[in-house]
Length: 70
Image 1: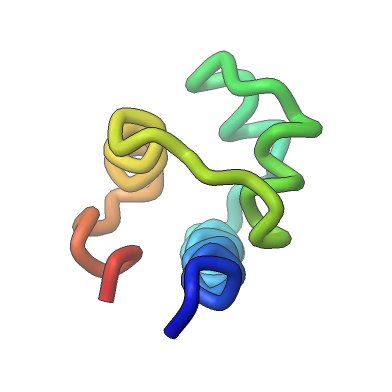
Image 2: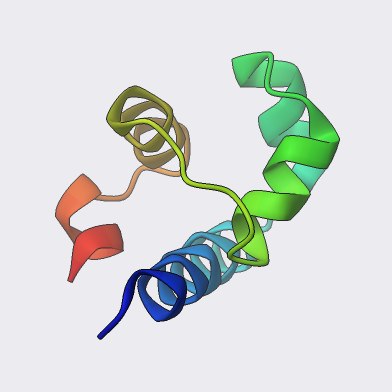
């Protein structure tokens, strides 16, 4: 899997986890002080997040960080 595909897959996993938890992008944005446009890019696979962003998103969504990286 190349980097572009990895980021798209990662973004999809974040979006699915957010949807399952019935959270909006605004919920994450407000709780974690993440810019909404950045979060949107992340979910579309257009941004390369730091491991700390991923950790905080996973904690907010009550999801194990490794689920995003599989």
